Length: 521
Image (cartoon, rainbow, N blue to C red; front, side, top):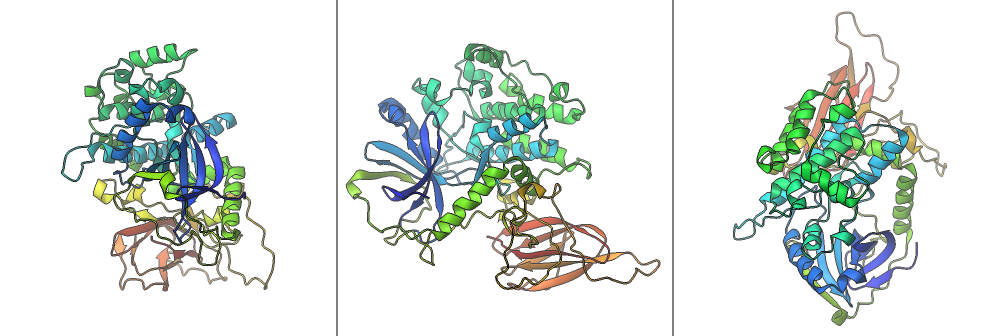
């Protein structure tokens, strides 16, 4: 890892991307002992010199900084350093949806239908939050993304889905910077945007419909030899059902996509939440033998699709853990102007950005599936998120649980080297298979075959098995073993302050499935 570059209140660690609007760095912020990682976007000089663009961009960003949803990458800080502008956001280790679609297309593989529906539902839930957001006085902010496209949907290696870059398209379109900022994205605009008509939240519904159509078919819906021809196709909005390109897709899914892609906004889903609810209703009816659409399935798809990138991310985090603490020299205050911060953002303290051990700590919010990141055999890890029930999304997709199945526990000799598990060997279904146990006697005739589930949460939590709360609640670190019938069981952990994690567990006769060390934070 190169020497960190001081930049205002931040230290830039690695440059990870350059686009039409900005260059992006992995960064840490001074004075944060947790060592939290940020993605810091430095606006390119060509745009920073455009006063009209910057004015529009800052106006939009001041609205966007108020958004708070688990599927929206939050902007923590917006400012000016030297002669340039920057945005500091959460860093999400992963790839964007465009990269995944390109990788699947190169392998000749379609995106699993439930997974496509899951990703679209998460994005729809985030958009609905933005569309309905009000300020402190109760006035609607009327936030419209205007650039819902695969490049702006981030897929984490932990199975999370987040959307970025609210408001940038608005600034670009109103200042004639679309040739720079929106190049290659005209095919995701709505017909009313192409016609230059006023747009509202239903424009984002159309754009998400375009993305969903592409996830299902593997091909761009509106393509052409020139940008002008693409814009003309969008204007006409003549949309074939996805099943025409992918026979076998259910007619109810065709109907959902075509309604989202109606040329007339009045014929579309009224709100993004209506599209979300339709997708969730569809996924609830998917046969159980279909590949699932949930965070564990997405995490495995990402691991199989990007094994090298995942390993590089693990190496990056390992180097951060081992790196010496940076010098605590303050940046000259006159060179940095903080323009906006999140309402709940704590001010930076005077301490350094080092971990408790003197080095940089790994980001506390990013946990890889242990089947991908840890030696085998391993215990399952869950990446959990606060439920989005308040937004009406429910625990089905609010829980970001990433699971691996455990093998028999054998003591390791001290100092024994451990080989990393191959990434491509990740399981293909998001269930936890029971670990082989000691030989058991045969099940008595007439008695249902049984197995066990052994559970443990790092904090006190209520254990819910197949929808029924178990009493008494689990104490912090308590291990509890339950005897259950053979087959699939739903296990959830719920804390009093609203955190949840859950998994579907496959139990075999005479064997024990383990869910140990579950973090709910």
